[in-house]
Image (cartoon, rainbow, N blue to C red; front, top):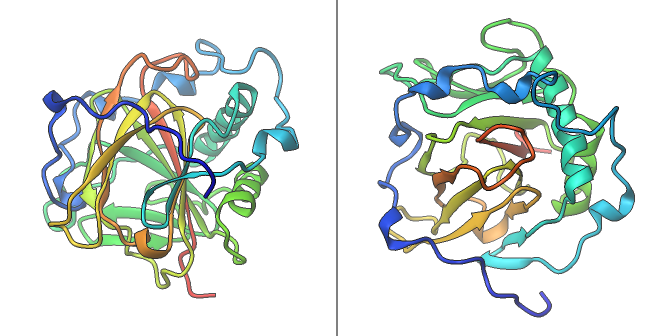
Length: 266
């Protein structure tokens, strides 16, 4: 693993731990339901001009830090130009597949995180349950293709020989959170879950495979890459809170999290 650097500052005690629970512990939606302003490229430009190109050295892979068994964290792996280019690609995805409001099964209570997907399959949540499907739940159109940049990130950081089939695009407004949960709606757990953070910092919490296991927290900043695989593939994890104003990338407060997953067994 190479030499270990000190982790970013621990979460202040005043933040507290999130309530234990899965997706149903996310807070009801409030102001988060409004369309995020970062989608308006005219008012909130991300790239200085035109479309940026991500150079190979932006995706170089140094030694990561292991924050839990087999949970690897690459702080700041995408530099600012690479982040700007990726945000532009996310905008294109969301023009084709607009953000929608997932809801809890059975109750239909809205979640605080809005989302979309790209790739052959997309994750959805509604009164019928949690599942993957090949089309948008509102437009009924197929999900847009996964950008080549995301496929390269998967190839460089996942350590998996099989390609991803879904990329969840989660939009966290400044007041959004995500309760502790496991990613277990996939048919096969041999491939990892890979996530990329863009925008404001998130206080991320991770535990073990049991809900009662102890947890630790780190601050995921814009440009960070995180991989949950092996012994941490089914670890409980979540987002305690967003730290508004910690990034200027999106032109507004909030965070985008891109989560790449393999859904079916290879």
